[in-house]
Length: 78
Length: 275
Image 1 (tube, each protein chain N blue to C red):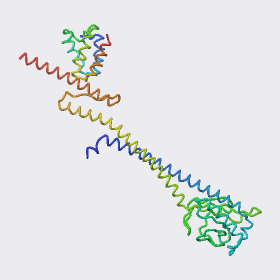
Image 2 (cartoon, rainbow over the protein chains, first blue to last red; image 1 turned 90 degrees about the vertical axis):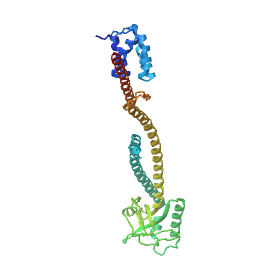
Image 3 (tube, chains in turn cyan, red; image 1 turned 30 degrees about the vertical axis):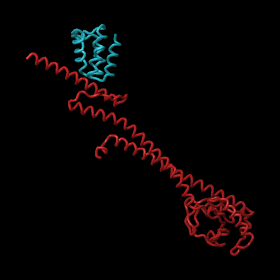
Image 4 (cartoon, helix red, strand yellow; image 1 turned 135 degrees about the horizontal axis):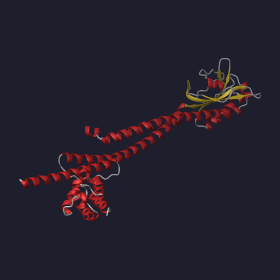
């Protein structure tokens, strides 16, 4: 499945914080918190919710301040 | 003990301190050597100036007439008193005297020393080129000269008669102890300055390397925990340099491992449910 430009951008930002498993993490977030959305189909209207979950779930795998940073960067793409 | 010796902090601090010691040691040697040379040159100039000032005040015609056995004559006494006055006015001067050149060599003429005066016509056996040059123009020893009276740096200036002919010289001796004491004082001052600088540099290096090593050690502890399967590590290294980059890389690695482990657990759970 082809990835939208926005999904590509979010992945690029997230990889800097989460490493090579970033895509796996993002796919998990969209699957469980954005009504089963395929990550590749990510659109602008999903960003606000995704940003929120990037902070909540991100805090479990990276430091809280880093998760906050990542969340804010993704939110700015709106 | 072995760990302290092999630690990065010890190596960093030691190498910086050694480097500083090496540089400051070289700077010290150069500065001290140049200062010693300059000080000696200053002493030589001073000795020549004093000798010249006295030489022009002595009547060369009178001086030329002084012969052995004239120690009690007014001419001898006048010149002797003039020499003593200059000696008393200058603490650094140990001996002051006049000489004349004979076929045998340089002989003393007026030596006003209280304790052990040379007699008129007494041959001076340690004549050197600088002293002989002093019969023609102001001159000073290049190196310390040791004779029966001690070790001295001496300055000379010619005494001239009314026709301008050289009829003798004035010799001014400064004890090597005075010059060496001055050199030692300068050397000790430079030592002190370098010592304080090395101490401060050592403290700064110790503090600087301490902050680096502290974070490297923290990363090391985190890596150790991860290698033992503990993923609940706190990546609390915040720096904006290469160590900060390393910590970020570490953070990414840990995050990826956590995500993959979570995914693996989930897959395992699903598989068990299906069974």
